[in-house]
Length: 468
Image (cartoon, rainbow, N blue to C red; front, side, top):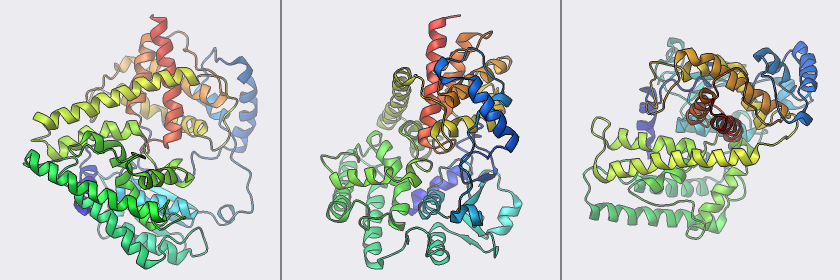
């Protein structure tokens, strides 16, 4: 397990995930979605919202980015809560892509405990010198306390330090040491059993793979037995550090393992009801599901990349390994096709997006990063997902118009409509491209990513139907 996590982090450091869609960028960000608008923006917000009435159900004219920014809902008014009174208690330094499993542990722990924090995204391919000077290992994650300036690194040490520094805030992540040790043993046994049968099988024969599969299934049986006896979480009724440590790889494997040599469907309630209940319990936690969790499409797209990196010769697979990677790639394309149908079914008036909602998160991200998204969609020198067809640089205005149409519709709760004066086939191509590139949790939380893909793919279908 440790080897896989270390290799995953090394690959992220090597930049295999590329420069991203432009939604995520290194730098300081608020732990809450978006940035609160100014008072002037708030006044414009009410005016713009009235101008784009949800009763109209369509947006005939595409608004400018300034007008769309004015539509962003005002954050909740300041309260007497601990967070509003004291501000961020620390800064989390994590990877730009939101894929580092070590960072995910701490990210989830902070959100579950409800500790207010800022975050700084670190480009693992080109770490700034100040970060390497601050953290002796130069690795992520790390935290820095706002008051004392104390810096802590390594995910296990950080989670323990959070309990020490904030015993009164949220649940204690480390509790019941005996049960914690037992749970960790089961998780480690499962992860060790998955080695050599997940992303790479090495030179193993079919008989050796079958034997590894038997060991893996037994480890899953043992984990499921514990969860059935005392779940839904690993230490019982409440989420703990054990769950924070387990979920990064169990989340990935829950989507990717059926495509690997293991061929095991972890999320099988008939076979492993305790594990299925654990997944459901994790996804019931807003701290996890609203931002930290990835989505099925994103992890399916990544699966063949991981297979080539761990099991390929110079990135090339052959034989059964190539067939498995192809099945994962086909599954990802099928998921996008399903999203087109879902987008059409869900494209109806919903009313203005409330503050903090997935629609508001998606629109705010577009407002903040639309220029970078356009550059990515029209890049002539892409660094990742080279199988996707980019648009020509001269199509940048069309891409921008499509993004504005999607963002405005999300905020107004209206059916997305094609912008006028542009080539609709290019709108369709732009919307499909951005939908395919959009990754959760790298760019957005999974619910916000679903909302944005829905709007974009509805526009793509309109563009196809228009045919001009």
